[in-house]
Image 1 (tube, rainbow, N blue to C red):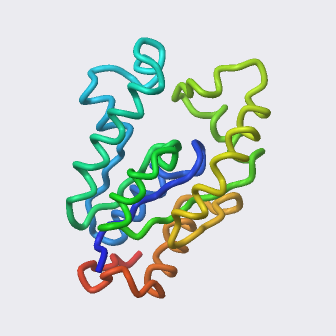
Image 2 (tube, rainbow, N blue to C red):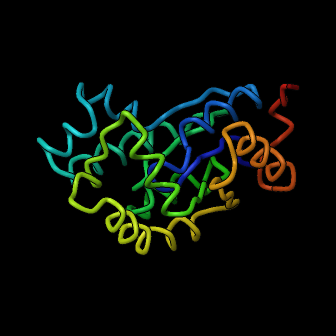
Length: 184
């Protein structure tokens, strides 16, 4: 039985915000892989991309993913590109129920543009086209990896966390008995 929850999806889908709320609801620890990568590198993801390139970032991501996936009772917010390396998904699947947080491209664009966080892959002339192009490639990877798919387009943070909790109850591979749902 898997006792962790990994949230995957495109940037702006709500992985970090929903992950924090879900972790609180289930009395689990929240881990953000991108934050761990930044801490290890001593610089932001945007700086890693600019100085070392995407390949170096993906290598760090794989290393941190392997470290975190072996832990227990965690809600893990994965980076948007985690699915680009099949080995990452194989590692995560061993201990995590994988939840794909999907959203409409226009919603993702609005969320990303309203965020203070820099998104190196969207620092282009036409971010909407960049999102469409990246999603065309990534969406099938997210869907293939997912045990549960939640569309967050019309959900707020609490609503998305609640929907995930409802789906976890139905998921036989998740060890729900290890978790206490907080009321409220």
